[in-house]
Length: 307
Image 1: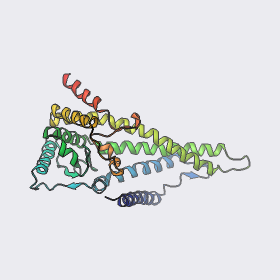
Image 2: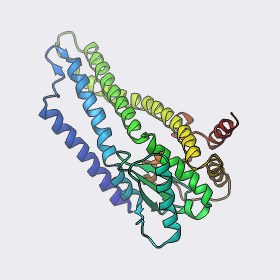
Image 3: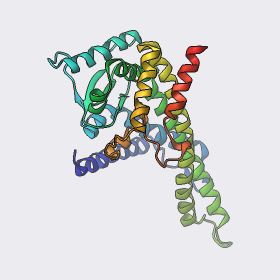
Image 4: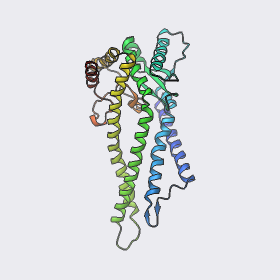
């Protein structure tokens, strides 16, 4: 996919989110949290909850379609004559049945030299498991089964919806406190002969606080993401076998430490990094990493095996 198409897609999704939520807020008269007497806190809370959760859930609803387009995922026909792809589909379906999923996920493949896979989708019954061509070409079947088990565990655990709920709560809190503090700062900075708050100060303070509080929120979201990766590893071990799960993580670690030098992660890959089995940490601060270190994940599984 060209960079131009990715930009157009990003703009269209954001326009859709803004237009949808704005229509809802105006339809229900939920924009009047600023009154002649100051902030209406209950109205502001409803406004922030609607915007915070609305954007998160619209993104979730569109996640499967967006990922297919942005990553160039090709959904595999279960009746394909390609033995490797047919085996992949059967593996996903068998592990899904073992995980108790009533509806089998779609299975797709996308072109990338990275050893990676991810699961996405708005619900357990509308999910997708996608695998990179690099992973299919460089891992053996037992290692692939560990990766698939991990991704199926994400679906069975409802991780996509849980992440959306957490992001919605974070968004709502960020919007609420940024506006409350911004309004307080505007009142404190108003001139003695002016009954109105300093709206310029209010706007600037609110904007700066939204950036700062969003950054703090990212730390909380990343911490939960790391916890769910450990849980998905345990789930993958239960579904595909602990040995296969450990082998998959060790294969990822060996490639990470080898002289294999894939392309830099593209913008589209970064957009779904939270759903991948592995992500490069490079210079990203550990607090913002969505995945634990591979050594820590392997050690956790080995310790659990010995327990």
